[in-house]
Figure 1 (cartoon, helix red, strand yellow):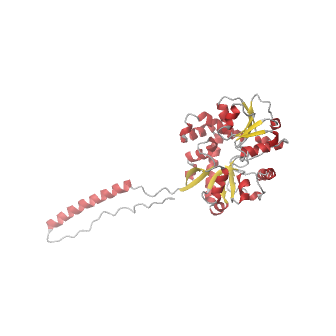
Figure 2 (cartoon, rainbow, N blue to C red):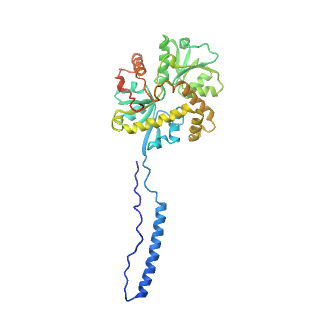
Length: 357
């Protein structure tokens, strides 16, 4: 936080002058010169004050780490919160920086390189057992980010119909894959019963669109993309079979302990952004596009992404931002069983709801 000190002010303009009572003419000349200099000094001081920047902005500068570039519509709540002044209203000057995925966000926060970051609600399950002391302080929505997407003319009506089919995921060490495993397990299938392809975020929707896959484990951004390309699709909500997690706000144990007011401010501002997306996706999309030049002319598509988040992800919470403890405990048990996480951690060490209650 930069702090600058301002000018203390202006002297009253009086001048100390010596005069000789036996030299009236000299006195008059001295007074005239002194008055001229005083006037000039006052004028110069006024000009200086007008151009002086004054005290610096007292907002605290905060680095907010994100797992992917901020221009993605997935980060709509963060962009909306920044552009509508919600962080500024909390006295915060937010600078978004991109890490290498959610696990890297957690590690950077854990070692103190940033005080706050975005990942998934399941991230602490995976990293805390490896000694990374972070936890979720809020989760954006009560449902999972991943939805199962099939073509409208597909004979896949439920996860059980995936047997022998090809399913695209973004990566094998990522939430969409874990959620796919969860949906399969819910109907008695395993990864060996289907052909799962990890195609990366750039190709997952393209492969599905080209019908190189029968189904896609997609997030709202990818669903909107295939719709925009004219595909007729059907969405099978993951929450009907397996409750995974949405995006979350992470902080370290140390930051939570030593700077609770800062964490509370960050959570409050971000959740206001999420609520705006829920309340009016159209207006939120306009705000997002105005802040992201690369999205110029894509208001309708961004709006559709926001509508999908509202429909499939952001609901299901008693209090906005609240973590469902039972849901998290079941998710951790599944991750340990699947070998995704090596050991179970105390559930209460994985999250806190103190900043959303």
